[in-house]
Image (cartoon, rainbow, N blue to C red; front, side):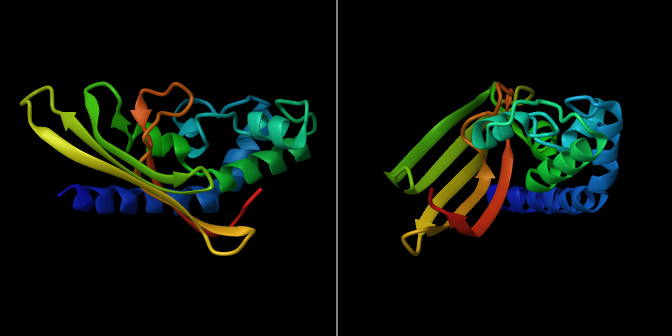
Length: 182
């Protein structure tokens, strides 16, 4: 049952991902015009909730940029497009499809390997407040190196730690066979 639930949620997430990816220039235009660090209201669901719509924390740490909101309209637009395309629907996957932290216990958390090469299984047990029924959820993540500089990154299920002090475990679906080892 938990895998069927995940397949259903993953299908919803995929539809939302395609919608956001296609309509990204609209959201980036809104961000560029308003100069706001986040899109207003429910529109914030199209970008990541652990950074602003321009990926300021990431840009500052990786590229040593100093502006949280880019100065020019063109740079705001391009940066917002890049960040939304890089992390589409993180807010939606957390706030709408996410698993509430409160009332959820991790019943199994096994991590094997080391930081760059690991597999991790997490099982969650959620108790329904209305009827006391237990519902199972899962998280699976793996980094599998195949050369000295490349690895496959996989993540299916719910993330085992909430991002940015969120009160939800975010639903994740990720498969990237082209990650580079830093």
